Amino acid sequence: MIYLDYSATTPVDSEVIKTFSKACESYWANPNSLHKEGVKANALINASTEQIAEILGVKPSEIIYTSGASESNNLAIKGICEKYQNRGKHIITTNFEHSSIYGPIGYLQKKGFDVDFVKTLDDGKVDLEDLKRLIRDDTILVSVTAVNSEIGIIEPIEEIGKLLKNYPKIFYHVDLTQSIGKQKIDLTNIDLASFSAHKFFGVKGVGVLYKKENINIEPLIHGGKSTTIYRSGTPATPLIASLAKALRLVYKDYDEHNAYVKELNSKVRQALSKYDKVYINSPDDALPYILNISVIGVKPEVLLHALEEDEVYISTQTACSNKTDESKAVLALTNDPERSKSSVRISLSYKTTNEEIDEFLKIFDKCYNKLTTLR
Image (cartoon, rainbow, N blue to C red; front, side, top):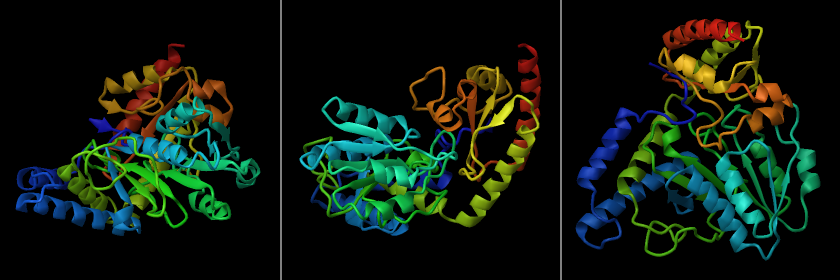
């Protein structure tokens, strides 16, 4: 099997499984219970939270545990807008967001919120001058993903944060889902940030919303004591402990991992660029873990299933997207409907081997020649 869909989800690291299993076996009590076993479980959560906060460069009190990035994005966007709507009902975002950003924003539009989409430059990066132009007295939230999950566009997150510092009534939310373990981002000028453990070899079902401690939000889930007042429910001790372990592991040998994946990406780019009907959609400076291509005239699902016959696994659009005939992100970047209707995503990892890439390229060549000849 050659797995090249790491941006959709990653296999759980064996060390993370050990941490999860140990927590299930030895820290199973309710961490909100006052007896010895509950106190022990609560101590593990606190230790995990301190580790996560240290890696992110934030305070433990600023960590909110959720079921994943989609819940974190919903909690951030709805939580801010419902809490501070007396300040205004204007939201700014981009055309390169995940569906879990567009979903809550669409929900808020039905409740009277106004949304603007900031212009982007030719490489997909936010146009800072246009962002300044869009800001109004009633602007309450700017939400921008750090890395587009489909194409790998890296947005100028820190520059946007510095710009928005001049507008203290605006809250700034960043979706870090594709960034964790692949980038190091200074959260100083970011008010809220979301991510999910299963994107960096953690267990599915747990994520984080970072929220500056001086900001209040309206919870999505009410009732019952938890690790914070912003998300009720019995704390999932094993999931929290395993998330901390996954986060520690993914930043170990960070520089080496990034350099290695960059080499893999370059190898694939060069090989695929030789085909007449292949277009590379990801910009040259995109996150190297993601490579989006279009094979003109070949439907994405046809190419996906052709590769699957040889146990090669890639994706069309993003795993969470509403399936349509075209990729909105590729269309926004290239302004080419044909490329947007034939795009696929190859996503790499530091666990991807050179041998796997060599075999993938052989299989791709076979599928390409077969599918383009059939036209």
